[in-house]
Amino acid sequence: MTGSCPKHSHVMITEIVIVRHPVSVCVPVNHKVTLRVRAEGKGILSYQWFSEDEKEVPGGTQADLTVRATKTQRYVCRVNDQFYNYVFSEWVKVKVLDIDKSGLPVDWQGEPYIAINPKPQAVRQGAKLSLRCAAFGIPTPHYQWYRNGQPLLDKTSDILQIDSVTGEHEGSYLCSISNVLEERWTEPIDVNIVQPDQPPPAALTATDKVALLIGNLNYCYHPGLMAPVMDVHELANLLQQLGFRVVSLLDLSREEMMAAIDKFIQLLDRGVYGLFYYAGHGGSCIKCRKGRLQ
Image 1 (cartoon, one colour):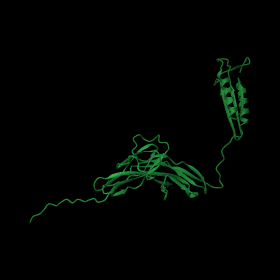
Image 2 (image 1 turned 120 degrees about the horizontal axis):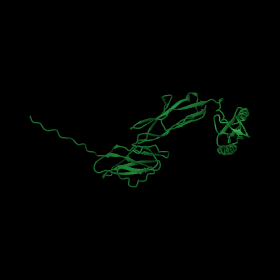
Image 3 (image 1 turned 45 degrees about the vertical axis):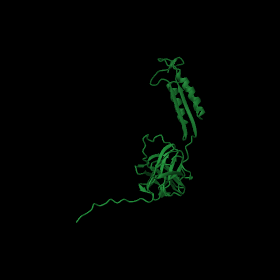
Image 4 (image 1 turned 90 degrees about the vertical axis):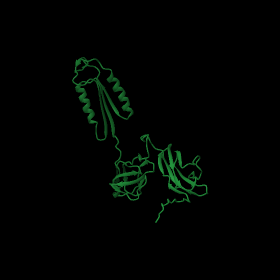
């Protein structure tokens, strides 16, 4: 009995099949992006890329299309053969975020890079809550929001929005941002729900603003000082411009200083901003004043 060697069978491709579609991306403005499509078919295949306004992309006649992203735009690629067969790839979006990219690594490969983190909020009950995070990524990152460590159903976009918050929406929020390369997490932030009968505290305002400025220049056993006069004068002018009532005193003895400070303290009632400034020698220096030791 004789046998024969098995013959290799070949599959004839009679239609065009896209084996790799391009993917959507999210990049900074002016970032260079390459979209890729891979197809199989009979004979030589040709390519033509189109933008979302159905215009041919100039020079977009290769399997790879490189563009400098200046605005958010959608693209699709048509693949055809010499037999007039053709097929289109899936539409993809090149999303452009015109935000700070200063921290983006020079050798960035497309792993999610968080450009905007959500911020803590205090929201009145019944009002709208809106949290935002944003990240660059190739492919475009996927978002998943969490509250108190639990994933939130259907909260899978860069903006989390709740139209009418209640007490149950209070808690710690964060967002997972991922693509096929990596997963990143935002920092957790707190959302506090303020009850209608508990309005946010009013901003603190001063009921009065007073300042005591003392400058001592002349001393028995030390050279005279010039700086205290200038310092007290300049500071008094500045504080008056800021709405302070200013008392400026020069060359006081210890007893006179203590008396002035006691009077100043009596002015510091509730809600009063007070500022005390002293220029001169410190410690136990003895000062001459009016011909006698003080």
